[in-house]
Length: 489
Image (cartoon, rainbow, N blue to C red; front, side):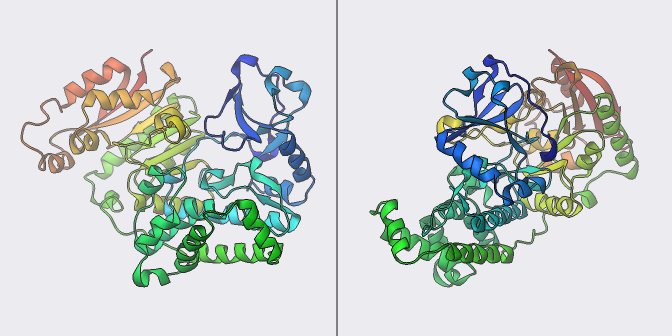
């Protein structure tokens, strides 16, 4: 990651290396581009003019300096070949985010903090005469447990008498999911994953019938919003804006609305309930000797990898090994399926100011697929995961026995998360023997004889086909074996 305050001077980028981000096509005024490992943004004539006005304000450079907006600078036209600029009047270069994630992979507190940052940025911009074109949760990313606004192209001069154009998107991708989980205790992640544009007011209205409509924020932002959308469904947006101007809609009203939404979002809360995984550290079968040896094994493997840039900790649970990995690597993505566990971990990391561990909610047996237009507007987890090291500790048995995923498929998937690491990559994987208490518990719920190949020798044989096994060790309990392997070419 390039810190916002020290974006390096660009070098000329080869013509053959320029490609457009498949998810940035919705605003034709600008486009995110990738070239030579850099994140660029091409601006059309109007967007370039807005950029010049933006950098002349006091608030925008301050937001960048505070780390709330991603580091951005305009490239010297001489540094980028004319053939690359194409239709763009100006080309910007952005700070590179270590790992791109999506709102349906965030916990409740993560989405709430992202929403609050979006509102803070807007409340800072409006008095200076600026607004944002949209209010999408996809405008934000993460530096560990710190949210950052990335959509520089969304800023534009505000027009007097017009409301915030992004209100509907903000509701659909941030406020409505928060209302759903805070008031109904329904996990929002599956809903957002299935609808890239977020939840419609009409959908949510059906969930908040009867007395539920009187819960904080629901009557105004769901029921009234849906009614207003239906009322003006046949009117053009220009006609609606004209009516609002005639009615005396002002910048002060925009700010008052933003302050009210901010107050509402801060009031919304969801306390993660106790779950099987939230107490896993206390209920698992590890002895102190097991835990100590396992931690030494993982630390040694990561040291041998030579300071990995990106480590994936799959099945991270309370983040113990993610924290360990962060001492040996530049950045760690901690993936866990239980939203309650991830939410607790995020709150801890956020309180500590941790910027090198990103916690994500994801079912490893059903990882995030590609989505949106043509299935590539939002990249799949596998497409985003170009790791230098993968930790799969106490995961294989849950996939193989708990979810009936064949061992060869599991190993292929784990190795595939390191597509460019080569022999420098490290896969640290734990095999839980069939006689381990946790495996016995999982097998008790399955028909006898269903997993004849689930044993250590077969796992080791399969692992050796895809990796060179550098080291193995059996934990003192005698029912778990750790391996470190390097991917074969």
